[in-house]
Image 1 (cartoon, rainbow, N blue to C red):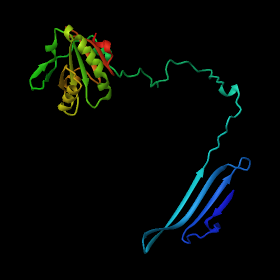
Image 2 (image 1 turned 180 degrees about the horizontal axis):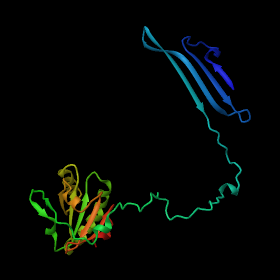
Image 3 (image 1 turned 90 degrees about the horizontal axis):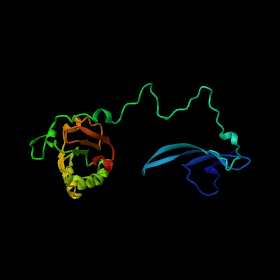
Image 4 (image 1 turned 135 degrees about the horizontal axis):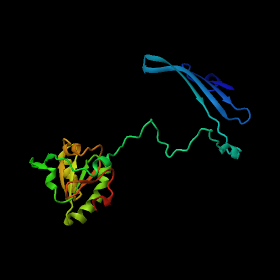
Length: 235
């Protein structure tokens, strides 16, 4: 252990400042293990006003051994007698995990009867699209994964619009103009509705976006999935 003080300095020093530093040094390797500093002085607020100050700090340095000798025993593991192999490390709370994506309950069901408003304020029924398959995209301009899906959706729209597939979007952007400007800027041509009250989204039991729903010509839901779009969902 080595102790030093500001008073040990051979040069001039501020009489109003005092510092004491203690060093703990390893005897064998001469490496610093810990340093403790204590200082007292004053802080000048104005020409005539000086406030006393006191500071104490302790720094401890961890020791790391470089290239230590190791044996195979370090990596040997013997499981307890009652241990069992599990398929996943997901936590088990005593029951089946809740479904994050309600695909099964929706696929195979008839699309609900729901009415929403168009850009001109006129009421539109989702069933009015019946007779041709319709691919619905729920999205928002603030949703990164939604925007990542747009190029794939655009390709599906371009390849299938003359083959009978109808593509429509329901945006949940903070303002209707946000979605309209974004779609126009990227030259996306499908019909989009501003679903401000999430009427259609709630009717289809949405629980997150992006959500893609495919309804066949008879009105039955045949595809229902969250996340970035996979291009084959509209085929």
